Image (cartoon, rainbow, N blue to C red):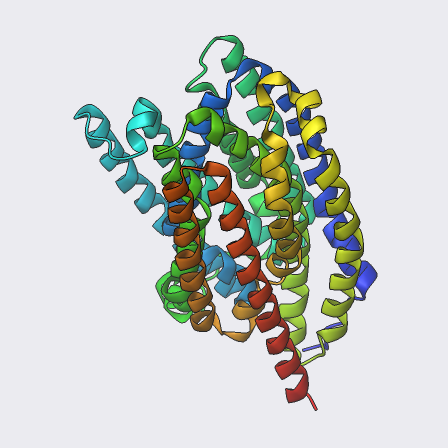
Length: 426
């Protein structure tokens, strides 16, 4: 086997830039659509949409068991293909089970908790889980092959089709169902785009019998459903507590304002995190397999990222309230308060979440789960404090502060693992 040629930092940045270019185009489309959507839909409508999507973020983790992440970590292309096949089967089975349960609950008018606010919209949850799950699996297949343009293209298709459909449904006065339905159809379009280009991947074209079966590949990577999935499920559940829990006790309009602030602060943060995390994960995993140093790459990445993020966060703090009111209309006054509450958390999260692949590379997923338990406990305490005081904004401020503290602890732990690996090379 020839020695792997290690990429330099410009290569990593170029690959991340390819992802960012497509994602930036997708976000330009999405942001442009929001100027219209916020004048068609009310904060109450946004509250219901965020409740809908919060369930998607939790359930899609169950539907894939996080096996999509194992596609990149697989030791061979043949093994990666078998992992993806097993993950697609699990995703289909879970989605069908969710559809059966949702149908039974809707037909018998037995929807519990926040589901009762959604009504028949709950029937859109299973197809959305299915399309999100398959798209995630496909995107990691393209990530393994470093086909970042296809990932960017699918994200653009998702944003463009979803935004246009949301506007159309809003103009048709489908205010309650318009945003969830447009989101489902947009994700379906992205899924189809991935599927049409899947055969372009060299390791998906083989017809010879694989050295391992899908079952064997899934068993080999069982750490993902055993440790990564529970950790991410815990994290996703706790992150969505404002919509899953607090929304039951506060006005929908107030929750809707927070939802818009969350969208326009975490959206750019997630773009950066997603692009750099994918590019870093693939490259760092390759270097670790070749027993090469990774510290310099990670150190330079963190320095560049924070040199951009810190000034941007300071500027956002001062302009948030007038900017949001100007862009989205008078009914969104108060959104800037939530933006200011979220900014410290987002700033820390940019560095931490871009390195969230570290436990997958070093097989330390069990320990990471403990951070999720601490985070959930702190977030529950924040919500309880807000409920006791009868203040939604207090709950969000404490929620964000707790999240930032755990993110800092996680970042320190990730860097400690990198240092330990570097010492093992000496």
